[in-house]
Amino acid sequence: MSESPPQHPPPHPAVPACEQQPLFDAVPERARWRYKPRRVSQLWRSKALRAGVLVTVLALCGLVILALVREQTGTEGFLVGLGLATLPVPLLMAAFRWLDRVEPGPWRNLLFAFAWGACAAALVAIIANTFATRWIATATADPASADTLGATVIAPIVEESAKAAAVLLIFVFRKRDFTGIVDGVVVAGFTATGFAFTENILYLGTAFGEDQEMGASGLASVTAATFFVRIVMSPFAHPLFTMLTGIGFGVAALAAQRQRIRRIALPLIGLALAMGVHALWNGSASLLGPWGFYAVYLAFMVPVFGLLTWLTIWTRQRELRTISAELPAYAAAGWLSHAEPRALSSMRARTMARDFAKRTYGPTAAHAVAEYERFATSLAFLRHRAHRGAAGPDFVEREQELLHHLWQRKEVAGPSLAYAARASGRVWTPPPYRDYGGYNPYRS
Image (cartoon, rainbow, N blue to C red):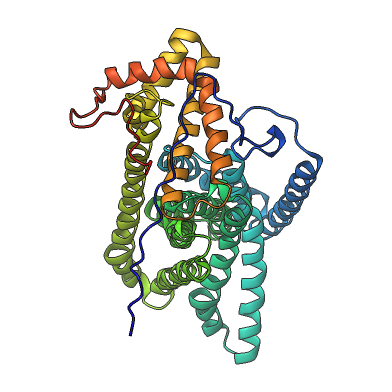
C-alpha cells in the first residue's frame, strides 16, 4: 500500500525585481483597482445605487425602532435613556478602533456595522422576541415561564443571528477588508455596540418611567440600578457575545478558498458559542436570581472577556510580526529600504513617521505616508496569504497594484520611515552572513 506524499505549504512566490522605472504591466485599469487610495472619488452609479438602498433600509429600520422604543418609554423616558445609553458608545468604539490600527478597515464598514446593530438587528430582535414570547405564553398558558424561556432561549438565538448578519455581509461583500481575526472582532464589536445602544435606551427609558410612576429617585431608583448593571458593570456584554461570532468569521477568512467546509463551519461554531454564552448570561439573572447573576459575572464573564481581549491583542501583535517577516523580501528586491520593514512593524514608529512628514512637508505628505503604511501592510498580508495558498489567482495583479501605490509615495514616505526607524531605535542592518544586496529569500 503506497503512502500519500506529505503535504507542504506552497512556496513563496518570487518577488518582482525593482527596476529604475517599473512598468507595472500587470496592474489593472484604475477602474478595477482593488486597493484604492482613500480620497474623495466619483462613485459608480451601481455603487451609489447599492449604497442608497442600504442607507434607505437602515434609515427606515431606525425610524421604526425609534417609534417602537418611544411608544414603550414615552418621550421623557426616551430622552433620558438616549442620554445615558450614549455614554459607553464612544469608549467602546475607540477601543475596537484601537485594536484595528495595524491595518485599519474603512470607516464605512464600521459605521454600517454600528447602524445595522442599532437599527436592523434591534428591530428584528424586538419584533421576533415579542412575537415568540407571546406565542409561548398563549400555547402554555404560563406567562412567567414564557418570559423566562424567551430570555434564556429565544432572545440569544434571535439577537445573535441578527447581529451576525452584519458580520456575514461584510465578510461576503468586503472580502478585501476582512482578512483575519482582528477584522472579525472589530466588525462584531461595532455591531454589538450599536445593538446594545438601542437596547439600553429601551431598558433605561422603561426604568425611568417606572420611577416616575412610583416616585422613586436617587440611588434607590430603578434607573440607577439599571444604569449600574448595564452601563457600569457590563457595557461589554453584547460585544463579548458577538465577538465569538466575529472570531469564527475571522478564522474562516484565514482559510484558503478551497477549504469551503472550514469557511462555513467556523462562523457557525462561533455563532453557536455566542448564543450559548448569551443564554448563560440571561439565564443567570432569570433562573438563578441576583446572586447567581453576580457569580456568573465574576466567575465566567469577566475571565472570558479578559481572555478574548488578550487573544485580540496577541493577534494584533502577530500581524505586526507578519509585516516584519514578509516585507524584507521587498527590501531585498529594492522596493523598500532596509529600515522600512522594521519601522512598519512598529505602531510607534508608524506614528512618528506620519508626524515627521506633517512637520516637514505638511498635512498632504502625512496623508501620503499613512496611505503608504496601509498599502505596505496590505502587501505583507497578501504575501502571507499567498504562502498559505489563500491569495487567489490574481495575486500578481494585486501585488503589482500595491507596489505601484508604494512607488508613487516612496519619495515622501521613505525619508519619513527612515527617520522613524532611527528615532525609535528600530534600525535594521542585514546580518553579515547574508548578502541582501542581491539576495531574494523567496526566489528559488
